[in-house]
Length: 118
Image 1 (cartoon, rainbow, N blue to C red):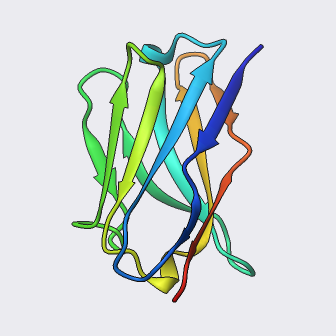
Image 2 (image 1 turned 135 degrees about the horizontal axis):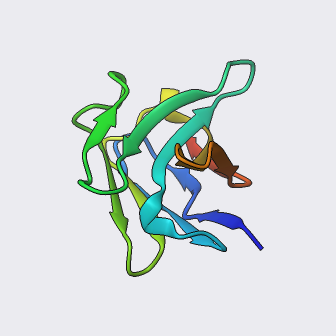
């Protein structure tokens, strides 16, 4: 069964940090490009960060550059999002997505809530 399971969300004060994890099962993880998206109430889902399958090349939304870091551990079938210097505008449900371009396949996780508030 193909599954992505996010964890690590929660409530944090402005300026704080969280690390999100997304564990994959049922796929050959190393063949998939991994993404983190987020969706705030009343807003469209937006891409936050992406990491390639092979070289580990990363890319970030301008709003999180210098604060967030995406990484992956192919041995653990897990992708991470380290979030530092969090702001109230970072409040959203965070989703991971796995993409295999050769198979034209996308898999989404169920999301994890991140709330930044004092």
